[in-house]
Image (cartoon, rainbow, N blue to C red; front, side, top):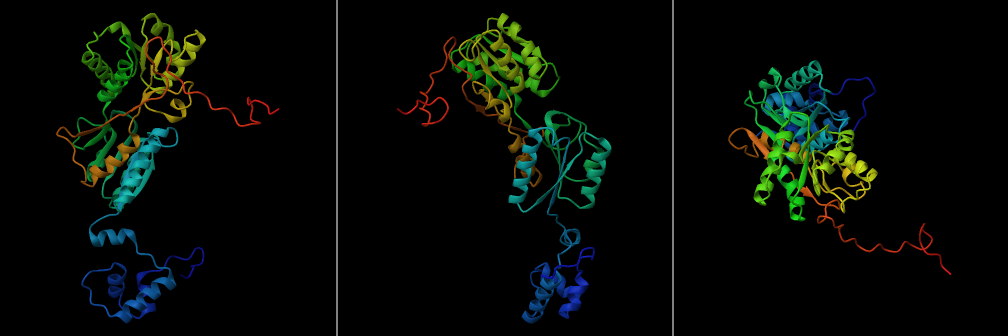
Length: 363
């Protein structure tokens, strides 16, 4: 393929036709592989040779207008770089789109309404198949009016006033699973450190926690439900209140709260899980898997939210009546839960290789 000099515009269909000695229509039929087009083998060969020599690439926009379909799916996100959750949503959407023959156009607006409007307008100009409107944490939104000009799916958010389908985590089932991890280990006095922020997570996880207690014939005690800021400082600050409840296990609103609670319990000489079993929420790998002991938690399905959003947009997955597809939040068992007052059995440590720090010296 000939490399065009820097600054030179890319080859046009007219140039290809001139080089091959055929009409523009013939070139269009060849490069677009139009079924039923009657083109001789010699003409087809000359067109393909000219395409290769000139480095011609079909204009995707023109192809979209001619064929009436689009290979593009837009995704408008409020944050990508500042949170790992949004990145997982984008990853899931991108892989699902690619697997179904589409390309994802991603815009990160950082919550700027003007940037969001410009991004949606640009995507509409590209005649996108549809637009995923995504938020990094689950909450109610008001979608921009421009979103109504193309098929849209809300991802990790919802708008009760709009007809767009939404793909969201099942907060109720997640709260139920978190409490069940402790109930199944034998705990009957279980605290819940909830968020102070009004959100589906606050109400849904509390309702799921209460349902799990009910199913285990454990009476709900409002004194065991505490509010805290949804961050490490909030978890640290609520430790004394948690201990004052007499709870043997605690469900934390998220993994950051659990991390702060770990620090405070350690300062007070309370062992996890021997003195207090702890369950988080989110499965934020950089936190949950690296705490000591590793944190048992409930995963938010961010990757699957993005993938399911694409499937719904393309009509490959149905949405229940009511317009919301709720995805499961699976439990992730690690080492922060044990029977009340009893640490878990630990596997014997393998001896360190000879010469490693702490290994016995050869004699």
